[in-house]
Image (cartoon, rainbow, N blue to C red):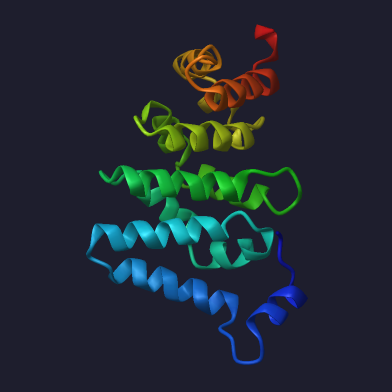
Amino acid sequence: MFTNSQRQEERTGKYGTPRVKYLQELVNQFQNASAEETKEKIVANLANFAYDPFNFTFLRQLNVIELFLDCLTEPSEKLVEFGIGGICNACAGKDQSYPANAALVTQNDGIPLVIQCLSSPVRNTVNYALGALYYLCNASNKEEILKPEVIDAIKSYAAAGGVSTSFSNLAQAFLDQHVPQLN
């Protein structure tokens, strides 16, 4: 359920921690954590906050989108999975609040990192990458995303209906939206 200021105030109560402060605490914990499992849990938590437009201003203010992108370069498959999940959540929408998040991904050279996630052995990572690319692809970055090798990878997922319906459906939606001449 999406939040608004009034609902957030009702949920946190008079003495609760304001959302931006709570998110800042999570970012600080991530930056100070040395244990991989702790970092994974924190990034998963941040990714859960990234689905709600109410949090977008805070996430951008705290550089959480950039933190998600940094996770995509980590050797931990869990950090990659939760990082791309956060990116997908923050970009997966067409109303006015999502493009600023997508722009941050593009401005911070995140497109190649998202594309790289298509070859992950982790199903969720691939699903999140397909979803993120669906929403990231626009007139200003189409050439970067719609390279032949990327389209071939997405076509192979579209044809994988027997293996994974989610891969197939997400990939086919991407192709239908961004590569209509194939149909």
